[in-house]
Length: 289
Image: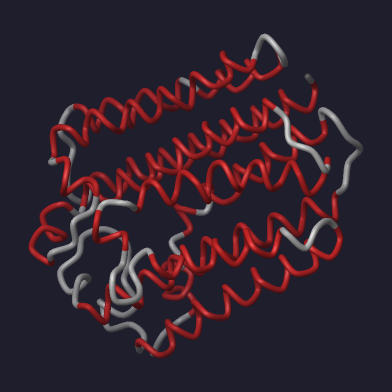
């Protein structure tokens, strides 16, 4: 029987900072140039979190029915681990996407109907990551999608629906959030290189190989930490985000030192914590700036 604990772990809560941080940063950038619009900010947060949970369940379903998750390290897999039926996990994914679509519809009604196109593209991208006949996550393009949808579009979209304009700090914040979201995915895929290789899943980590992936991870973290410096001439408060830099030391050292297998689960959690703290500090800095 599938328990509530199974469903919670299947939602992969360690990845949720990738959805929360961009909304915080986008809201901070909006507050720098406009009045607070808490309803719109909350709706943007619901969209982001529902999409993240939806893509996690969708990946669990698609990888499970393909047999990719039959011998996995790391977090519990609902389908691959036999904890839930494929139909039940698919329903959970569709329900999550439905929540995102409903919140997005209300948000579009309050702002612009063009926002529906972005929302629809995000849902299609979430499903196509590991679902469908030609999943792009199996061809090394997962990080590109994460950077675009959980970085650039998430931050810029959150800023736009509240301020009804885009700003340079929101663009820089989108790059930073996208880089850290990619770092979370890179950590996950680095852990799974052996099993993904056997299953024929050619993630970017599989394509690059172990050593080059261990160079990519710190490069992504460094890119994120560079963005407050780039933004500082216009908004000095952005430098507040650099207080999160010490949180990057541990996970970067572990990745560079060759940590592998289940030990990378802790690195994934630490990267999520870094993204969340970075996002909070950057949001506050942008709003005050």
